[in-house]
Length: 357
Ligand code: ADP
Ligand code: MG
Image: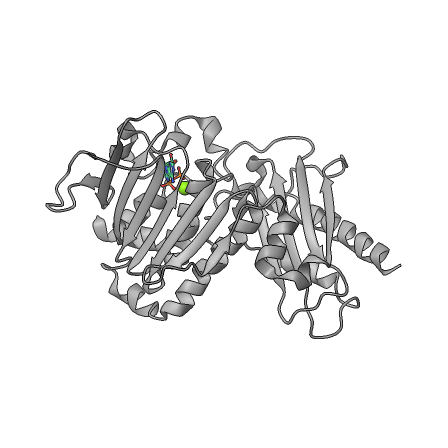
């Protein structure tokens, strides 16, 4: 059974950056305003994330790393919300199958902090590795999650990830993107061996301000903004859509509610590679289809061989996002993807054209 769990965990946690993404989402979900990440050997030796969020209640610690048992899943209604953050309580469970996981946490109302270590989903004593209780200790409000020796029990995976600097830069990339999407949160990342952080994203006021801080001044003066939403009733959930087998939750009838916030480069900004940040319901996802459609707008606007910067935050009724496509599978899908993408592209195009006049 533990082998099967290990394989399943590997489907969710591909590499240090995917573990970190899950932990970051949990910290953000907990209302943290400050998040510190510490990394050793590209996250394979050590990946630690310290936040000042709401903390975890002592009573929740014994089941924290069990699959599908987390608080958010206690009702059906909550199940339809899983696309907002996290998914089905699998992240910590998965990590506990492929690494040494420990949690130090304190809620505001608790007089003390609690520490717990997990192996294969079970809260254990870190020394004897036998089932155990949380241990009382000193600590600040918030949560520190420590992952050590990621993939220690899956040697093939470990072997495939031996380029530590590659893994580290993927971690920095994930943090940078979440920092832009969460401008009011202060984030930093450092190597365990150094004192100075390699990435500091101080809390700022707005997404464009965060983009300027993290991607530099050249982009900041050249950003356009568009906000659009589903005011048009033509965008509805068609019953004959191909997505029907992709969802077993009840699909809403009538118009799909959505809204999009975009910050994108104008015609003066040119880079070698497209930077495309896509958040759907506050979750960093990938969609080559949407990326390509938005890139296409710049054809004829930008000189050949140059590329744009596009940040898109899309909020859709969670019931319209395909939750059965596993979030760690790269591509995300949602109902009326094409129509929504087209509307967004049109709005961008208009804004770019207006700039040229
Ligand atoms: P999910 O996020 O899908 O519920 P996870 O395995 O990622 O599953 O997390 C399990 C639960 O642990 C979360 O629902 C949350 O209640 C709690 N949790 C995890 N990390 C934190 C954190 N940093 N602060 C507060 N609670 C947390
Ligand atoms: Mg989660």
